[in-house]
Image 1: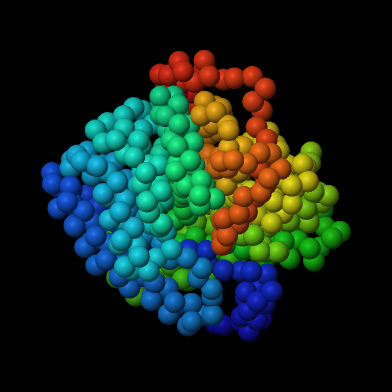
Image 2: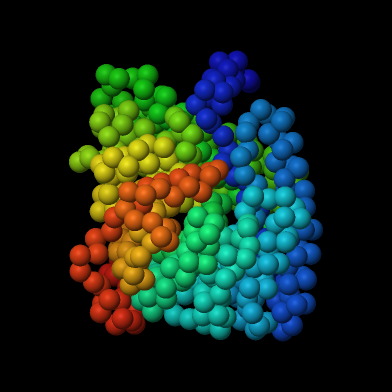
Amino acid sequence: MLNIGDIMETIRMIQDDNLDIRTITMGISLLDCCDTDIDASCRKVYDKICRLAGSLVTTGESISSLYGIPIINKRVAVTPIAMLAAVSGGDPVKYAKTLDEAGKAIGVNFIGGYSALVHKGFSAGDLELIRSIPEALSETQQVCASVNVGTTKAGINMDAVALMGEMIVKAAKLTADRNCIAPAKLVVLCNAPEDNPFMAGAFHGTGEPDCVINVGVSGPGVVRAAVEKCPEADLNEIAEIIKKTAFKITRMGQLVGTEASKRLGVPFGIVDLSLAPTPAVGDSVAHILEEMGLERCGIHGTTACLAMLNDAVKKGGVMASSNVGGLSGAFIPVSEDAGMIRAAREGVLGIEKLEAMTSVCSVGLDMIVIPGDTAPEVISAVIADEAAIGMVNSKTTAVRVIPAIGKKVGDELEFGGLLGSGPVMPLNDSASPAKFIARGGRIPAPLQALKN
């Protein structure tokens, strides 16, 4: 039975607290598009995406209008393109341009899956795709790329880690005249999930069905507002408040995912209940932590607050849907979070504290602007650190850093839209990790891998 109070509360959350569905993402398998002729393969890719996702945007808009729920992004994630490139050979950039054309044709915001999974080594197509990423991202608008370099079961492929430091720098240089946008569409992962609806790390895993709908909810503003109403509550009470709020947010995602699945005639996959911030005032994970009692995000106590937030969000959300997946928790992308931006500008929040926070949050070092003259091996070392945190803790971690070519610490880089803007943050480059990175090979899997 409909409860008028619940309806009015949801309306208020949407109007006042930036509650929204951050994305509905259609995952599409391209395995049946493999062909030894790359041009033929690209035609199959384009046709299949347009056929299955042709009405994704209009369906999302219709659902949004029906329920009054903002659905901010409509996206597509596809099979890691390195798998197709292994069969077809040729220049993988052709696939990137095909994805871009298909994305524009169907009207989505982003299309992910220009990806390679190399955690245990390189197979056919992987190296070619990875080396093509800078060119592919510089010559497309909607394509996002990701590379998985480690897992808890396999360890960390340090040859891939070294290569990705070089690719990130190259991508930034190729788009230096466009605010170094290419690396903002590239993420390096450890323990990448196959059903993640959020960019830039989204791809359609080989264990997924031929086509599926995944939903990413959001709502840090709603959680912040709920905590704000209880200034005298103890931490047990705060955890309960966050759980109940996460439950309500996730139920909305379940509703949208179920409806989209029915209308599009494809299976409903998962709800990713991650708190995904935006640069908008009041839509910040950092502001939640500050409402919990921190004077500023980044000071001592931040990691503990974030751990509690992440746990409460998952506990509340998992009760609201039997199909929770993806990443699920709290994102801390610096340039996309108004509170993080402020803390970074003031020097309260640094890379080392962010790294500690990644051990308890959903992903990792995300949307961080670094000096444009940062050496590739330093970036590779940052990736290795994050991958190690993910590997040892059996969780997803990631690195998405943007070398700001021509800029130094304290300067600003502006992306616009959901990607926001951010100050150039310093890295600890007082000594070099070059010899460590140059050793190559693989960091073996930890003892936690032996769970069978």
